[in-house]
Length: 409
Image (cartoon, rainbow, N blue to C red):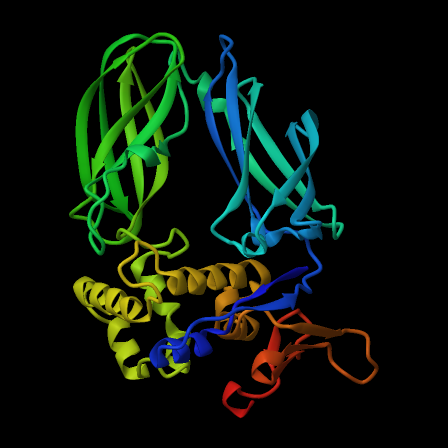
């Protein structure tokens, strides 16, 4: 797949320090599986009485699609199939082809711009399995994702309460480096009207850290509601929000993960502890000493915040803007490494994950799996920096390790 090759992290750091401009190079994508994409779903009451609705959303980043030049534009084409099963029997099957046309080549390499589609299906309250298959028609590479969908709780009582979700357009943002003032949480419900009591508890692990109570006027028909959760005094983390409602003499409860992060921080960045641990490879490039990194790992929440924000502020290629492109790229690589190379350990901790995070996508890949008197091995070539890396599967379980320590290459 022809795409723009992001220069390896170590070179980016060098160029940032030296003040040189960043440049990108074209590389040939060698991965044999289909495009990476995200699927999510939200369960709601249906439009028909007694029915539920599941809204399925699909996001495919542009740089996961092969665009072919056609006259003055670039064409991408892929096939999407959505299937939903109930007790092993198919109850939803939808298939269609999407055609994309872009006028700028740079857009074909964008991870920030995505193709997004949503589909809604009316179903009986029950448990289902969702299968999504996306095929890039220019490469015939395909990838399938599966998710379990529980709609059975819609039949818990006369009030149909859907899933909780973040209402992004209503969340109150704060200045860079600070927590948002509040995050708004929404849900869709139907079946009962009148004023009713709600309460929520926010957990960090098993420990409750915040709670609130409020009254809400409900409508009998299907309706969307939202409420604020104050977050300014919270730490950078992913919490668990539990909402409880007393409606018609019954107690209803829904739960969701609630991510609270500093303004300008990419959604790919995990909680602060994991985020700092994953910065390990920046020390390999010489940007900060290992002792400083280890001190941050054991530091207080405020020390961790200072280390994280100050490090990425110094690396920001476009200071003064909301986005830090280098930070976004780094944690995108961490996520990609987890998706591609996870096995006995997380993908970012593997040898292939380390090289991918530091150097980015290889220019070329050789795979050797069937040679006599040789264990399976893979070679990654990086022509722009005149380097190659050999990974050997010593155990036979797909755990490819560098044949020599990184410092020896």
